[in-house]
Length: 412
Image 1: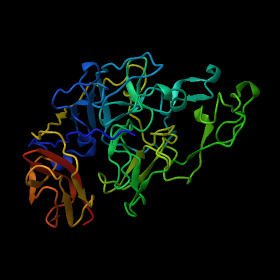
Image 2: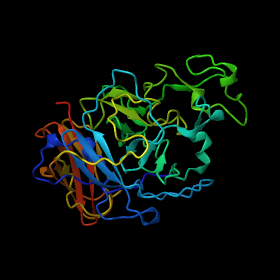
Image 3: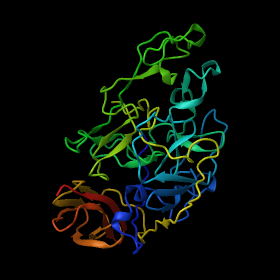
């Protein structure tokens, strides 16, 4: 799979804000601060992030910074959608009937590209019973980044957005790569083995499996259908997996629940959160249900789904998330660990540039601690005993560029 594009990360600089007023739901978006353009000259990534105590408003074009297209057998072209999505900052578990993930966007990746569920818009004999699996039926029209445009020009991914992050990195917890419209975060394919954040990192396994059927006469769960509602027999033309009803949920089979998520500790949420994960199999191939499951875990506020949705107009006072003047491309080759950290953090820097200055930045953009300098290609360990628990950024700078990485300090 194509390596994830390296992007410039940035931090909040407004002096009127406090660390408590922002969090991962505000800081995780990939903002376009340079006017960079991509497909057909359209501005890429997220154009603006505004937030209040209760909501984040994400303005985006639906065009990523990575190269997209061509789309074989797909006549549609990606177009600027001028979306403004409203993401709740107070997600709540739905204690009633779960809300189905509909056709169209069901969430948004951190680069402002739409997330679609596993279905395309068609079913067998148009009977709305056996629904086509977009990954199987439309997969030949995906570009190298596993996306394609809908008839309205909305570029989207039905599955793991392989160009958005390094989906082959099994050495650390995957980053937040999106948010569902119920407000819960979506992570890449790797998480902590245990939900309490212990046990190292492992691939998050889906709890769905392919059904052992040869005839499509029953639905998942065993519900028998009358002959007039049968699907086509399993064959070379209609192989298992062709329809989403070819899969069934088996509680406890994998790490995730029927929504393709779990309650767990993550680097950004050291106190725990409900989180979705994209799912891959042991070979690195997309595994059903791919992103969010067939239903949301949380309550879905109105306005983001359905025809004409995605054009929220803030009807409340909002603050615009602004960025400090960190320039230059992110420099590849630096790393920091452990993350989350408790007593110390080790920082390794690239073998380029001169000396690298390392500092710890809090969520208001202020330097919380000057950690020191590191020779190029070296590694140094810095104490964190005087640093309160919270989310920070480690900024590494030299004459050749700068790098900012998020660091969670927790567990005191």
